[in-house]
Structure formats: C-alpha cells, structure tokens
Image (cartoon, rainbow, N blue to C red; front, side, top):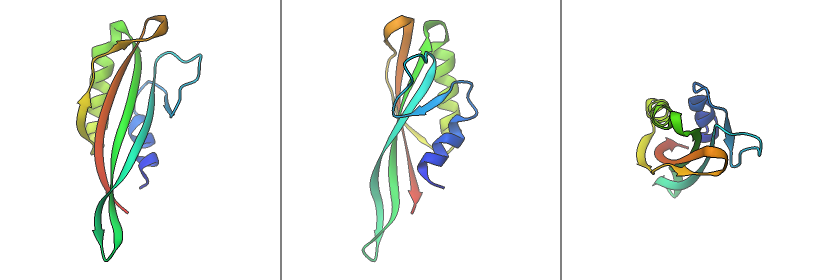
Length: 109
C-alpha cells in the first residue's frame, strides 16, 4: 500500500476532515498532513524499503484539545505508525489550536 493511501485509510476513522498539504480557508477543525520519504534499506543496489516521517497538524478548539489529540494518536498508532513527537498546542486565529505531531513508519517498496 502506498503511504498516501495508508494515511487516508488511517485518518478516515476520525470525525475530523483531513487534507493533504493545506486546509481550506473556511475550515476550522481538521487535520492537515504531509510526509517525508527517506531510503530505509538497500539490496543489490536497489531501494527495498522507505522510511516515512508523517507530519500532522491537528486543528481543534480549546475544549477538545486533549480528546482530539488522544483520538488522533490512537488511530495513527493502531495503523502501525510509531510516535516520534507531539508538540504543545499553539493558538491560531479564531480560537483554533494547532497540535503538531510526527510519526514514522517503514514500508517495503
């Protein structure tokens, strides 16, 4: 399975809409994701596996910060990703908070 498909499949179980790279201007609560791909394993001069660092920005209201953070973390971990770091919430415009999260996974090519 491709990393983009795996992310979409993982995030579909959440009530928040998810977007790749950028959120629409009128969207408040949502998840924006992207990823970084690096080689993980080589054999016979061919790349056999890739490591992906998943970057999530979770946008939510103050009253839902902890619940939303836990829900997103649980869904991603249950999909086989490993937690790297979750940063403190940062207040954005319109009383929306951004929680940056990073996870990793290695997939065979």
